[in-house]
Image (cartoon, rainbow, N blue to C red; front, side, top):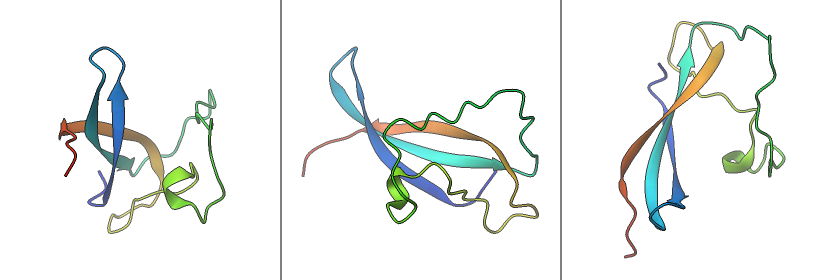
Length: 80
């Protein structure tokens, strides 16, 4: 698991609330390449890092090979 995370917000259509999500890449194994589930809808060039699917965050690990990402709900987003 990468020690580097990135966060974003996501709206739950079930309750209409926004939630803060933390994403971590799983590192050390390569993709099996049986399917290409890259979900590139809305993807932008790499200089829009938050909107590019080609970045990997396996820095500080033995292998920079990434095989999946996991997402954890940190809590409900609030306006400040």
